[in-house]
Image 1 (cartoon, chains in turn green, cyan):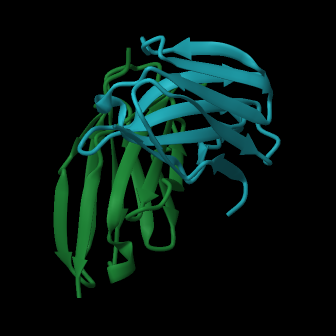
Image 2: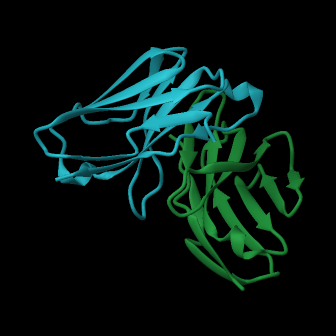
Length: 111
Length: 114
């Protein structure tokens, strides 16, 4: 089955700096890569996703890049704000309804 | 957010009890999922239902028994649980993957087994 690895497990950045979280996957059949943000005590929420026919996608301060050859994808958050502090999960899915999640990155934005 | 709801939000049960978790989605999705979220572990997929049919059972112990009477409702029946089953149980739903949409999660049920 699919194996998704996520790094780093914790990340602290100064407000205004950028944050980058990286994930790798093992199954070349995976073609859909969502990212979720989970604030303390709340449900995971989809923040951005990318499909395998696209190399990069942006939504305001958030961007995701995908390198299919190397089987890795990354989340980039620019101009970080304290409200960006949360746990971020990457996931990889295929044409079925299976999703495999990474272990999460706890991001702290220091004011 | 009311797209995916779960009840109860908190549950404390003894190892000999029987209880059920309920999930309901109002998004018109076809697939529903149960996940277990424990501290410092990735989300663990437990069950997947697609159009009411179970498509995945990731080696989940039989003390967890899912039920999906229709595409909008999903239950997780619990009996003779162990303390290590204490966790946050999340329900999620999604359209077919071809639609390009991810999963939408419910708020979770915080389960404590004593």
